[in-house]
Amino acid sequence: MKLKYAIAPISLTFLLSACAGIRSSDDSQFLSVQDGRSLLVDGVGKAGKTSDTLAIVELKDGKLRLHSDLVIPTSLVGPPASIAVLPDKKYALVTAATKLDPTDPNKVIPSDVISLVSLGDGKDAIKVVDSISLESGPSGLALSRNGALALVPNRVSGSISVVEIKGQKLTEIQKIAIGDKSGPSQIVITPDGRRALLTRDGDNQVSILDIDGKKITLNKKTIYAGLKPYGIDISPSGKYAVVGNLGGGQGDADTISLIDLSIEPPRVIDTATVGQTPEGISFSSAGHFIGITVVNGSNKPKSSPYYSEATYKLFGINNGKLEFLSEVKGGQWLQGQAFTPDDRYVLVQDALNQEIRLYKIDGKQLSDTGERLKMKAAPAALRYWK
Image (tube, rainbow, N blue to C red):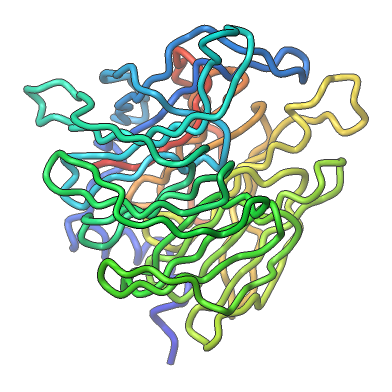
């Protein structure tokens, strides 16, 4: 029997969550990064002059509140996965793929910075405790199970940096060459810590990496999920991965693909159409849902035949097939998302309007609560903290 991979009834999920002591939706905190350089004016990119920030966002009694924020290098460029929270919940890593050109304030150029942030304990403010330079364009990173290693794709350089975390110090201990034009985008690690999957939107591949302690090697097996694989996530059970395929950006309906990790070698077992540009993709906290932020042409000029409002879509998995459940239309240039631990709410970042939107999940039905939190710059990645 495969009950552990089935989508459980929501009422049973809430009961099990309560018994396990999972934190309520009404008292959750999230980490959100904002890119101060990323502006769109009728579909045309402009270099903003606002500071980048890492913010602590609270959800309580159905309301969003900005708890505090910290000026820190970050970036909207790359998948909305530039934050990783360490297992002890005391620290987080933040990557910065771009920065303003110091010689031209109207030009954005690649950056190479990763920062280690102490999240404080309610008394001490959040602060950067270490930062190092990697190769160009660090993006959607992942952490080992024990939080001792971070795997960081360098999009511009076409490599992966392996970063060791000891106390409050970061050290790059290995560099894995992928390819100059491979465009490594986001990496995720299986729950057992033995493998990682890497999207490569430059050459349309999903790589498998084998993990043996501190030794990381590129597996010969390659998965071809679709055109320009970008965002990716792995289910809490470790059975499935799901990847968003950006396509050519020419108004076509793009796709998401389901990868079965329980078979050897892993392979794509289903694909579904979601609309233009699935920017971010994530399993929900309990693993019952897959959420997709679909830009849907909302980042294009209003005169474009491809212009439309963005859409947030909710999928499930039914007998190894992707199952569309519900959607909410609205917003522009959607980026990151984060579910509450009980799968009752999801926070969605709207980069163009510089706000975070709050949606509610009732059974399998998604609805817009109307709750919004204005941010100081374009929200670019979002993670549940505690």
